[in-house]
Image (cartoon, rainbow, N blue to C red; front, side, top):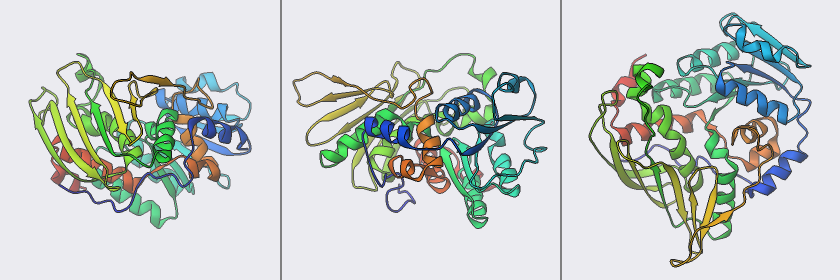
Length: 354
């Protein structure tokens, strides 16, 4: 199998360590920026926390019902709108950033609505859509309207990922990579998530760790995929193994066994050292086959905010930070989802339906 991405999709123009990134964000002056957040659920609240940590004082919040907005009404400079994106009529200030954090099924309609209102900078929560073709169509539409849009795969912007990316670059580049994406399945998932989301759980959730690994080594260029087993809500498989080569020529392998006891992890190897992210927020380094793993401190500008969120928002608001933190374009997000279709055995023909 082969991918459809040419060149590196996630290469920072000015790579730097986690501490250097934290210092750069601290220097960046984005207090005068304006932002609108659509959807004030769990992720929407994380984005609001990131905006506040960055000192952004002019923020509009849009939710379907007034309940989630109550706790923000007292914040100076905050405006709230209840009624949903369909009724939202706010016009953007010059350069205003719109962050879309609605449930997955509403992400694309919200993006289209904001573009029709004149917003030209969008950060859309992952995965944008469960269907790659829908992401591609949205990308084409927004490009035609002059809209800059990114998909919020926040693990690509984790300070831990930033640290590994910088160290790997200093050590001459990665020689190989392995990652695991075994899910911690809970019995209430069929009652918590829609059947469509569960049937494409690899795109809905496992892409988080896959995006992180390929954020370091480059996009999948060619690969072989193997799977076995099934779950009542995920008929295409429960065990996934494969290997390939990234668009930077770096060999990689992956493994997941959704019926066993593994967890998410990424290991990246160079000629000088090996790096392990497990949990993904932490970095461990080993320099010989006989030594143990050493914990590497990872600095963050706003450690109280969910990892990667502040970094992504800062990258959207400040060009200097955007050069240091790779952002995932919609076309790159679609390519990543098509890779997941191959890994998980999803029927890509369905994605061609309107």
